[in-house]
Length: 78
Length: 371
Image (cartoon, rainbow over all chains, first blue to last red; front, side):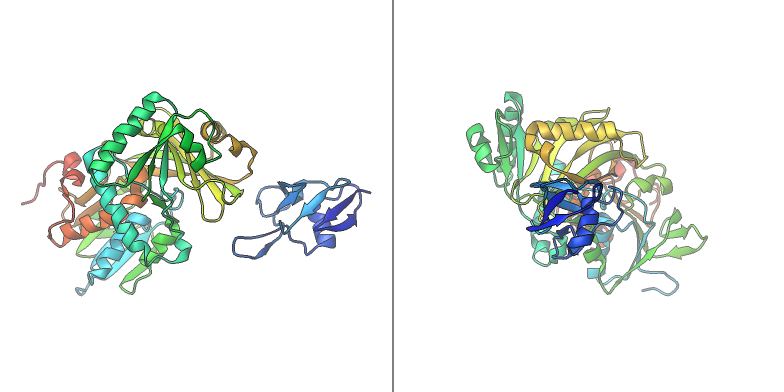
């Protein structure tokens, strides 16, 4: 059961949970804020649309293509 | 508008050239109908780089005049058009390219273009992401960028302009036949449909040059000027095979927009991995940090290139009533206002704002057959 930090809050999820799923479970479901200030959420779920860009451990990743790992720092408002 | 006509002028193509021509004609009080088939072209795909180029005197005259026009237009452009006067920094990788920069500097200065040579030590102060060891550069301060699709839409948003999505199947002087068989007539037809122009006028010497483009996620504040390698001048115009050159443009969103590639003899819009890889490798040779950034989209577009790199602007010498505004290659966004001014001056039989001779279709199509 990996435990990660989501926008400063600790969260424990089942093994094999994607970051996109973790955000849906415990956040507002969104991964980032657009140029125009809108919150943006995963769309295609298969790594194509690039909507679910999110900051993980300081690097830009796709939430739908990244599995939660112990100690991961996920920032959706970076 | 004369009775029985669909409009005073029909413009074929709603890219930046068609839009600029339509806007200029509408501002002269003409009713304009713009037909666009929604086919892929250059405006929707390109970088929207506003730059002065001086490969030959006619190119310099056209781009310099047009940039001045853009600076005037920019005062009224909505924010969505993303106009910025961020300057172009031409990069010299070796002494030979620095000599090109010095020659370019002298030529541009002689024509009143504000620019300055930047030595190697100052280069990285201006653009910290550039790799060490470059020879220097040439900064052209008044160059800029804009978002061409939004700008074309803004130009077409005029009371005297009507737009219609339709594919033109045939042109016959000042009338066109749509693919549903309907004929539309006007006092003049302006062909501004880029690489599709040869479908309607097979005699036009227009070749598609495919380009790949890629845009990154947002990384604000890392690059200021549009960074273009001086090798671009040779690779863009002298090569006959596929070529790639470093062209990195900072978007107002913080994204980095990366070009440029050229391929001949294809109209397949598919992104080709090998060409994209070659283009990106070239860009990272100038800005190594690019390799650590995420790209979010890659796509292609097609430049409509004429044999001498200059557009064809004026009446078709053998098809009275049909006017041409095609063949702008990769410089159509820059030269759109100049093209519109040249076209309008000729249509109204006025003295053009710059000498029209070098851009007349006659240079390829021969002299008029009609009196």
